[in-house]
Length: 379
Image 1: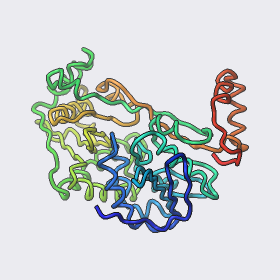
Image 2: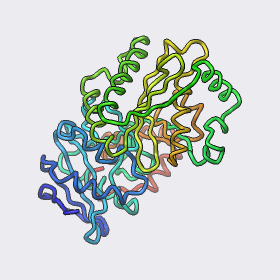
Image 3: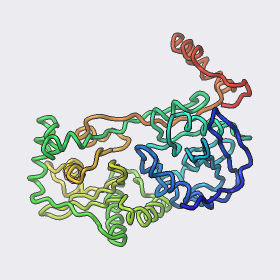
Image 4: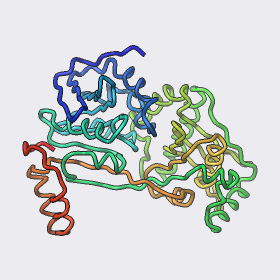
């Protein structure tokens, strides 16, 4: 692949043997080629770190971008894309609630090798002039651990998931490892719906039509609860239509329509990359479920069986504690939403003081093990 250069780097720093080029230029020309070129080498690449997601409507979502490139021994080792917003630097997001409505999870820099690459990228990012806070959305614990500074705010959500190798070991039956009560509910639901069939949209126009149907189902169920639902904003719908158009030809999107004898049961909107199926959104016919129909359990059970048969490794329900997720999953991963500030800033010192008052032993251990940097006040 031809190496396409980014905008001229205005700042360079070294962290050990890792050199970081920081581009403050507003043009994102050339980033796609670099990003796509690095993706095949990234172990366990999340769909949310792929260019399909990151690059979707990128000029709109990143109006004031900051691009960092990590080099080691002349080799590209990592990339990170941020957006600046009022002294805040947002990793993989804009910092604007409307533009960040497409919920990101398993977020983080795109890196090879050791954690030193990610740590160097995050440190160089917060060392950028004018940056006071680092915003991390939907990052796993290992990315949060690399972030400099201290968490002014932090929220944790569990992302339930299922090891599909265990499903294959059980003969491909997604119900085999569930509790007797869960198996009974799902089988009773299947009897309620009759002959079930799962069909995947195979073309972009077909997928967009199924997506529109799912959005209507999704919105109908949420409006019945007095809430707008995930697709209420025009940008949210436009983003996902663009995402489907760019990711489906790469085999990274599944729009799955599940029907029974009486018609539609539900629609699943899943991502698929590197053996991981990510259950992103859904729409279910709750009105037609009746007292014994469990459309969430029924639809995901069929999708899990399909993924296991296809040789996928993980069925990831993503963040949230919905009952059907907890019923079908066997384990979970913690994801974090955090606002990081410099440890020696007024806010950082306030956080440490509160920690000391609440947990004096823990605060003392953190103080003894933390690295304070050069005392410049940067995170």
